Length: 241
Image (cartoon, rainbow, N blue to C red; front, side):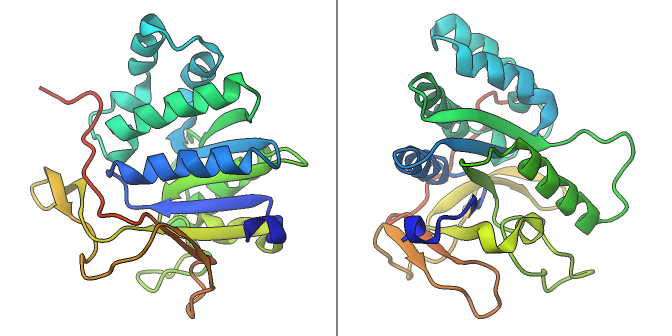
């Protein structure tokens, strides 16, 4: 179905902190790479780019894994699902795909700014520009991000800003919401903040694994990626003591 659309950008939105989303994203990268070169763009700070590049070029042995484990993305004080064990495993899959020429590069698309952005929408637009700059003509760019950033239309709350995916070239962009059959994810919530497994969706919603392309009435997504199973929490790779 996506091959018929020939999108330049495929954005997958996830609820950070579960084991299944990074796995199905890696599967999507592998499948897409059978038809066209793939650039992967991830919701990570650009200060991680040297470590990512080094890991992709490595043999993936124990020393390589240990060095990559020391990268900033795994060692921030605040650890959300982007620093999970499942994400670390996904990077190993991406490394293997890079080694055989199926993934040309992995881009950490969140720039480090000298000054805070003027607004949330400005920040979302800056991230979109970073993804576009990292793309290649003739390649498909697959983006893994939080599902709010993956929305094509304005959010219904606050200043109703347009998320990142809405700033990508719309005729060339497909945005998909990753949905599980209920389950849990690992997140930091509450006041004071507490981290651990939380409920993720409703287990009454049961869908088979697959992709459905059908634009939502509110225009947020082009379709849905169904995991076909409940989500399970994936804690940070490097837990704080």
